[in-house]
Length: 344
Image (cartoon, rainbow, N blue to C red; front, top):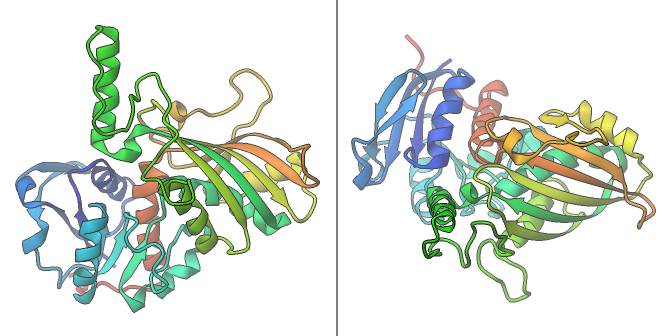
């Protein structure tokens, strides 16, 4: 079986990553179509050893497309995902537009692949927030073993989570610092070069940011509504890779050694954990990799049954593009979606 796949937002960071990963993983495609806004018509993007020219989203006919991988922002997804779904094409959307819709599954394949079967209500499946995706991959096997009661997480999120504009701003500001030019903040509320910003997305009435709320709501939907979670999300001057310091309280006793063994056997997780200089993973090393890395697993002495760990992943891959393509693989492997056209 081979599927016709459209990538919406093909000129963006995540869209380009989606095209790369489709080729890397040899997803069975009969055709790949690169779509973007009208101003990007003709822009060339790579798919394996081929070059695709972007077509306009607003004039494209999806009636023969099987899967649409969408990474074009919430407003575009809100308008176009239902239209595309109505054509019989399954939309896997990377924005926040559909994540909390009760008729739209929110899926991380290592955690809740079975939920993907619920796509038929709207022909839409949502990708979680990048910081949530890696967190639940690490939490799921531990939750199965000892039942998580409460999570306290502090994130250290790279500028690529804010798109190409975020990466460009870090580069420009860093250069300005070195040549003693004025530093201008446009994308972020404060200077990001050689700095930390304890705000991602807008503030809500309770004082938390929307990014922090997303982590709470999405973890409950994907993993378990009973889990209590509180987050502090921080933007850091790193180009690619999100990191998280995670404190976990369990209902049942679990040791650090038991957790290491459980996580080593878990899908999508790589444990790099030596109590010595350099015996852990940093975002620099995780960039370009598919795994969710877990390091510095240790007992939390402040609660009866608690662990502390360090979690790192490439936010453009597992946090976005890779997860979307893994969802498409779930649809294929579980025979939830047949191609509209049979291969000749």
